[in-house]
Image (cartoon, rainbow, N blue to C red; front, side):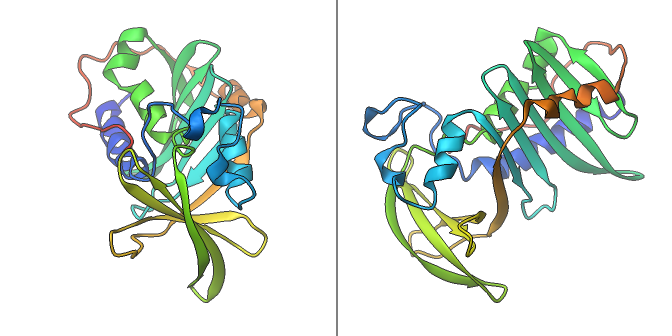
Length: 236
């Protein structure tokens, strides 16, 4: 597919912003609890149902960072994942999707409604697993509860909850509307000031979303010679 390197460079740079809000990726849960239990920091709080959904590995995460580039990450179990975003290219926005389905990796481009299978070497060179790991929310449960309060954003009052990750000394604030729906999140600095508020939504996913592959045409793709000239970093 043409513009492959440009797609990858943009994907990597955008996901670096998403990674800022994640906790350590070592998989440890507070109190040594298993992945199926709610860490005590979230019990009885507005964040609890979202942590439950994340631990179930059955969720869709959507966000629009300040770059105004929407990101959607979908996970259903261990072997079905999908990462989609729009990139601005000549001629307008172009949707790019990486998909892992039943052990096979794919790359889809909505502009031409084509998809191709990625070989193991391509998956490695394009850092697909690294992209998935940065977009995943499974690091969020590694936190302790700090406090709660209220704030007004664009004339609307929200309840917020603050959580602290002692492993990397990062504090995040999650904003909920009057219905208890997670709506924004932001990083807190040492003075308690919030950074850019990022619109987010976390929803239960449906495995049928991976059927989008049936709407695309398969094409052969020559192996990628080298990875894009871009770097990424692990979730902090």
